[in-house]
Image (cartoon, rainbow, N blue to C red):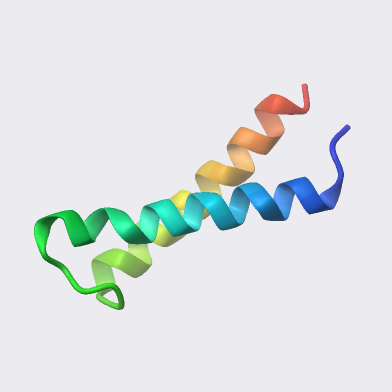
Length: 54
């Protein structure tokens, strides 16, 4: 089982990548779409941590 630290690393990586994606089409870094995709990326990081720990 992985530690909580790895969970937070994956959440951080996922939310960073998710927040960056809307800038590809010109949205601001603090736009609603950036915040939304950041949350989706954080959940993807949680999911990835779960899958890797199995």
